[in-house]
Structures are given as structure tokens and as C-alpha cells.
Length: 91
Image 1 (spheres, helix red, strand yellow):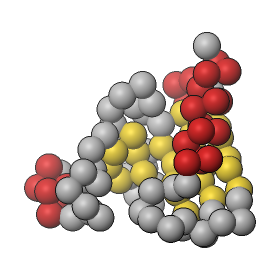
Image 2 (cartoon, rainbow, N blue to C red):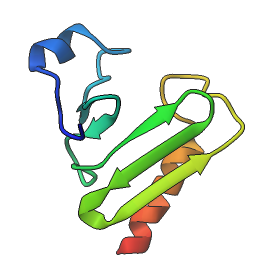
Image 3 (cartoon, rainbow, N blue to C red):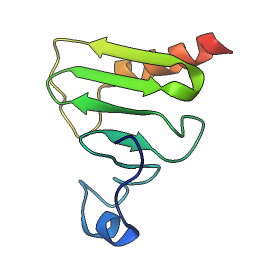
């Protein structure tokens, strides 16, 4: 459930923009990070103001709950900033 389940052809045919699947893919009902320093992590960004990220390789879970709906397909910057801070705390 936490591994990339899409083929390259499926990634080419879908998404919310040309770079939607760059470095990410889908498992079963979860987004999977496939590249970069967070490779192996998985989670979900909900359009109603929540994100969660689990990185079992680093024994890390980050949950961000806000009361702000997303205004684009990407979460607001505060979500990425909090996840980045959690990774920096591991260093």
C-alpha cells in the first residue's frame, strides 16, 4: 500500500498538471514519495487543511492540521515548512 503502484504510462496520462507525478506516485489511497531526500515516505494532503507524512525509514510522522482550505493543488507553504522542520530536527 505504500509503494508506487502506477506505471509510467498511467503517470503520463493523469495528474493535475505536467509535473504532478515528478518525485511522487500513488500507492493504494496514499501519496508515495519516490525521489529525493524523502524517498520512501508516504502520506496525504487533504484539501480541507490537513496533511500527514510518515517516513518509516527515519521513524518520523508529521501531522499538520489547519483551518485553511487549500487554494491550489499544492498545500499552503506552512505544511511544507513544518515537514522540513521535522526533517531538520532529525539531523
